[in-house]
Image 1 (cartoon, one colour):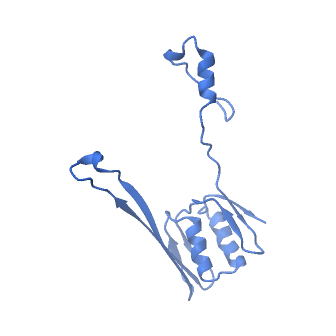
Image 2: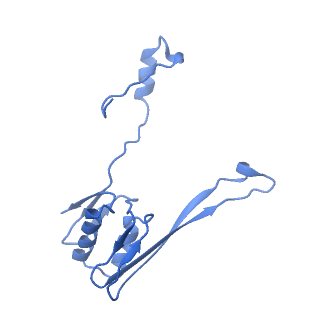
Image 3: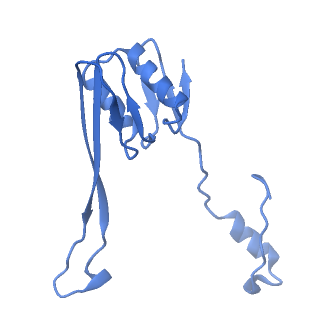
Length: 154
């Protein structure tokens, strides 16, 4: 109905036990979808963000800065002796990200959509990018719709 109201059907097992059903519903843990937010102090270059702020695919060219970020996903399927199928183990996808940043002649770099903002910032910091340049890249990424978070500059 709205963010403050819900509509619930009364299951057969709770017919005549509305109070117990309401108590059961009130005791549920609900994961709230909170919009990602990135806060940047322009003067110091300090960035505060959530762990998994995502970037959509984009290309970056800023001055003489080159940014290369490669993401890949490895799949691990453990095998247990004598067991077949899902009983053998749980399949796990493990992301692996290689980041590299350097200053050289200006060119456009494509950033894959599976890269986090943390990966990008780590690559930029590794070559000593100034806070001003970092803010410029983040602001442009937000304006282009590639930064999937609110950006607050302080």
